Length: 107
Image 1 (cartoon, rainbow, N blue to C red):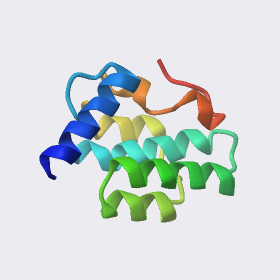
Image 2: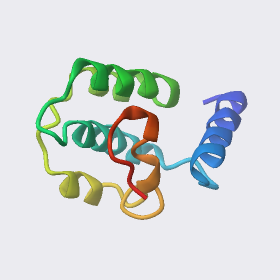
Image 3: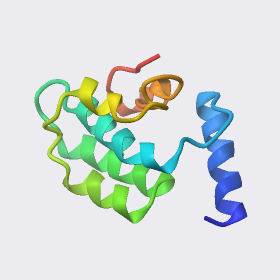
């Protein structure tokens, strides 16, 4: 990751979510899963919801997470996914869902 990319990500995380550091890369995979699981909270992952997550993932994450966002069936338990990522299980929870996504915001 270039200095420009790191500075941009840090600004986004700080400005949007109040986070002072970029979450560790190993948490990004769980983060994308968690967002998709929340979007599917009503039992259906609508195309518009997946598209929102795919676009957001394209802005924040690598090709690995991008492919996950496009293909993950969102069929795990949210609690189990969050337990795999210590940052998400603590200060990163409020970053999972944005009000504009039409899904319940976690704070």
